[in-house]
Amino acid sequence: MPGPPRDRPLPGHAFQVEIDGVALARFQEVSGLGVEVDVIEYRVGDDKVHAPRKLPGLHHVSDVTLKRGITGDLSLWEWVQRTLVGDPDRRAVQIRLIDARAEPVLSFRLHEAWPVAFTGPTLVAGGSQVAVETLVLCHERLEIV
Image (cartoon, rainbow, N blue to C red):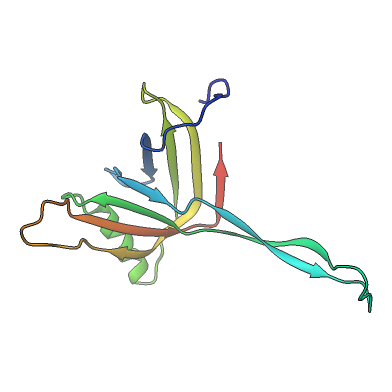
């Protein structure tokens, strides 16, 4: 999939989101792609002279937030409902950065993702904004390929 390494940054406006089992997964914004490692401080015995050693602990992946204009497609809401009844449906999610030819350049893969929050649109009479829904996903592992 990826070609030779690029020497300039990729644009953040050209991307695709693929969620297993969702017919239409077009989003206008993706945020929260990240990982963090806990730091464990360790000191030998009663050594108060030296600074503690710092060791890597557990790692945590951030929840990922997806925003899109509401359409007639209810597949995302149906996915949320599975979680609401206590049966989270874990799925693979891919966020692909694409080039001018719509070819994938870099992919972020979320493993075992499922919805943990859904927010409907803010509706304003007389406004001209698109009605946007927000979906927050938790997942177990982030992979960049």
